[in-house]
Image (tube, rainbow, N blue to C red; front, side):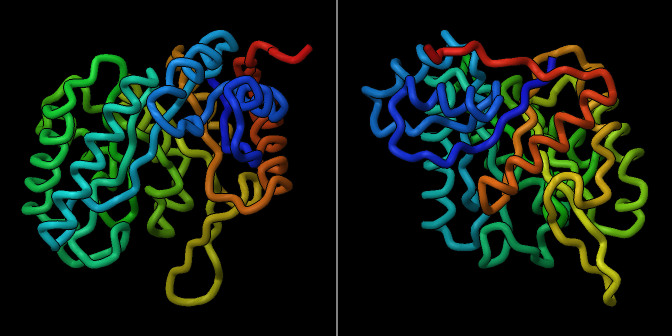
Length: 284
């Protein structure tokens, strides 16, 4: 059964209030909890387990392929620390992008989509996983429009080449849509990705995309339901996998926008006969 999740806007929450906020939103999956130090870990883990709240992902968001040696070494060290944290939390995955060969950590660069970059990604991911040897979580790369993995084929290649059981798939369908062809054919793209890589998918990002009319090609992220992503196909194909998979809403600006997204995704799921797993209530 699928789990819906997203950020909560209250800050400085203790474990009970953290769980209650997710219950209030109707989420059964969460981003990593606001752990201040290792002493907080056991109580957050216990609170999540008691409420059947899945900790979906611990995000890294840095550049393991930085052209600067010191920055690249530091980024890989942080990836290892975050993967170790995800393992202690029992999170579904630790996720990062593969990295950029340019100055902007998540930006396009002429060398990003080259054979040589495949080799660098393979080396960096193995270095991260082999240092931690996680037992309860996996390391995954978010799909991206201008860096690997940018397609079903490139992700399948990396899975085989990295060759580590702790390497898994993170699916962001909007990030794969980088052309009008993929935009209008996104239902087929989603179906092919899930049918070929579904057993490896650990977590999914939920957003939407809209093609604008000004030349040349402009694609903008929008609130789920305000674009053309085929959510019915996405949710149906994920549900058909028959596993707990977190679908995590991201990148919106206000609680109102997140409420719109939740309402749209839930309505689309209900129309397809899909029910998200509910969190156990901790409220009196």
